[in-house]
Amino acid sequence: MNGAKSLGKKLGYAGAVLSIFEDGYNDNLGAGTATKVTIGVLCTVFPVAGLTYAIIDLSVGVATGTSLTDRIASGVDNAVKN
Image (cartoon, rainbow, N blue to C red; front, side, top):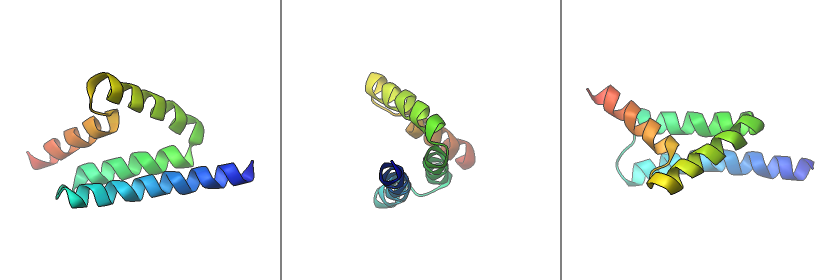
């Protein structure tokens, strides 16, 4: 059980770091990136809420083509730019 918990945390933090690399690669680093990283870290620190959020996030992504996290990040970026 501890091994799975440790692996889950490592994967969660790795996902947050990958968000930074993805936005950097797409030349889109900004407040939205910080928002995505914050969401990723919070989902890792609070795994029950994180699992619930992940299910909602993936469901929105499958249904619309854009994940909830990306929608939130875009909204933050647009609010900061204006």
